Image 1 (tube, rainbow, N blue to C red):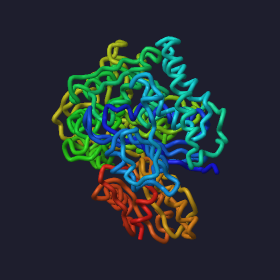
Image 2: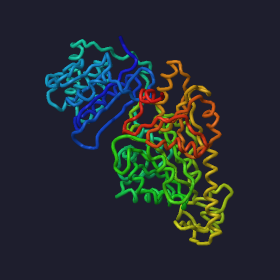
Image 3: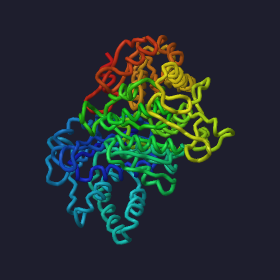
Length: 562
């Protein structure tokens, strides 16, 4: 009997190819019309250690990982030992011939009989998994043709031969395992993306022309995605010598009139804080992607956490307006990054897109993004003015936004200084001017408040339990609320995809109407709960915090809800 949802966990050492098998299988599932959520858990090493690649798949939309395992693909004995107790009643383990099942229901896959050499082990594993799940042979076959197209027909045919042998071997075993139900989305042209790829696509849709970065997990794939499309889109991407250089390159590009983005992670962003402050006083728009991981210092560099909200909020000495977005799914990754450029240009301020390792590395299915529904991009800095001799880069205006022109493009003079300055940009220590300029800069905050995105309420006002969350905790919170409703408890979710500035009238009544309000977030101190209290005075009834480096699951939330 076919089932709605299957969770597959592929485990082994770094370097054994588990991510390759996982990505190939995920692509097959998406091309077959299924919904997926991928969770990658890997250690900070090139070889060895214990890594996993989990794919939760269903014929229905899903947006959260799962602890229980239906199919365990063990590439080494340690994987069996560590994960056998997670197997469900229907669960099955796929092992190498020399492995012990340790009491788990298992099939020993005779890889040596199925492949001509070890190079084809990934294809054999893919074939066995596709047959077990009930995926049509033509789906992985076409994937093999596309993957090995440049290597010639001989390599393609060898992989197809291994694929066919592996799928037939599994069928001959007649395992007691139900496949997936037929997918209603079969035949639809869906995309498979991770969060960082969706962020990069959002930046490209917004017209980004420059990216400067220093590689740092888990942010690097934002830049790599831009690099892969640089020639087609017309972008310049610079790998700087360090993060200080990266942020200042981004500021320079923006000053010169290019839309610029700077992806980084916690430790790298810490080095950029002076540049953030420079963006504040020079009123230079710049978009930062801050991909969070557990700290302090190096911490757990390849795991997930939501610990850098305060870092983004208070980064840079002095006070100046900023916006912080925290996407919770692929669509939000795309649209909020696009919006980040709009807000940066509109208020001539730094804007932050907060993600984390879970969201960054989580592959999911999505329909192609609707570009026609995006708002028009903001007007770029001009290159002419009626009275160039009278131009003042920091002219005092009612809303705080001064005219921004591209330097060197006309007869006007653009003067910029990191010190306090007159409206024309020249340095000053006149204390009255200081007050005028600081008040001018802070007036731009009202523009950002007027544009602030309200939180998303999923469920009814006045629910018995309201789960408040932000960023990547959206999916687990939604599933937890669904399970509560099925159990008879009226539950809802309030998700903040913009975490600064907060506008209390957008959410205060929803919080007050709920029976019990619980904030769910991935850090040890409840940073967002504190921010809610600062912004609106509201104190939640409880908090569910996670900071062990792993993402939330619905069960984790339910177990601690009380």
